[in-house]
Length: 73
Image 1 (cartoon, rainbow, N blue to C red):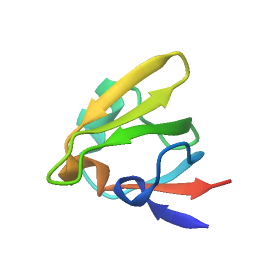
Image 2: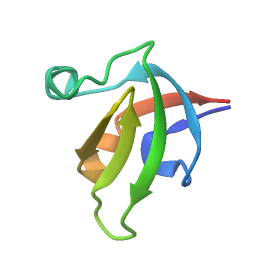
Image 3: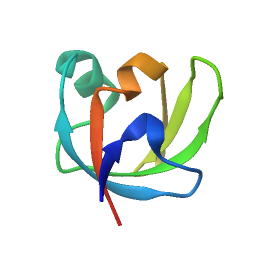
Image 4: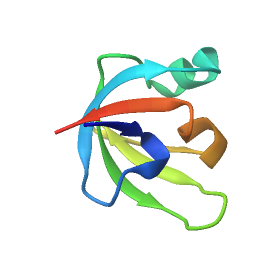
């Protein structure tokens, strides 16, 4: 099931399948198409969203997380 990163729940994991904008900023964080990530936490109002990408925790704003689409397992 494909969903926005910002829509994932705690513990959900999947593979990044599409990035709709701001690719350079996300690449700098290590978020790329084909990478597997796990949702760690998200704050209910305007982020941040924190995901585990390999051995690294990555935090991003809600707007940035809205541009990442994940194929959830």
